[in-house]
Image (tube, rainbow, N blue to C red):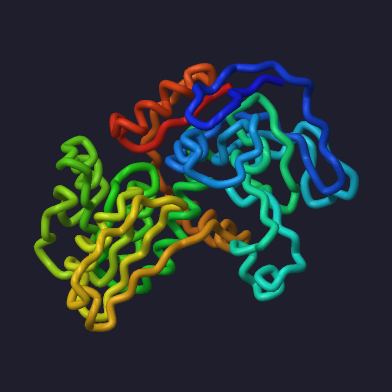
Length: 327
């Protein structure tokens, strides 16, 4: 196998050949067909997240086919197309696992962060955390659904059932969630960095009622806002945009510090909450909703060896939609 390996925080990824990984009990080997590039991958590469076991292969929006089965795997078969998401393993025994909150597991492992991920030709995955995908759709078009879609779905559910929804950061997750929200009959208001015209045009083409700069006030009060950009300064802006009783959902795994803000923009039973990881039920619910909605992902495809270029373009805000790597 070969993969793009991160050897130290901030270092460029290096293409490296390795022995093919062998699945252990309860695991499968997956031949990667495509892997999405997520902002969380930037946080791994930059060393923003703790306890990264270098060297590590990033990537957690994986679509591929099962090449080998470990002992005890019964629900998956050779050749099946599966998706491998961010949450790659849970202990099943801690308080959170026993309380049906496996996304908060104390001993969780994460694809492309604490176990090797999909910026590679092959990976080994916990069979319990592989989602069968069927045969409809292209691997590269499906890949962003495995994190941008899944975390987007969880954040949309946590935003509540309000009809006016703000999306701050209209990238991979934003453009997927907007389609689900519109299918649910909600009005979407898209906020983009620096008034990004391409992202705003994408938002409007997907049915957004309005699109503008992150600092702008929308033309109506919002019932809820979801922040996908890792920028703490957006929290006060979103609080000012939501109505009393509204909710601001911080959907990223990492965010710059939130600046101080006056209590009066929180008062009125506004809420600020975060989203952490996902559950397998999130995956089941979202993939069913995605199939009903016929989500169209907007992707730019790079060969695996160009992973550093894809990450750089994501960092600089030069991508519309999502980046995807093909081995």
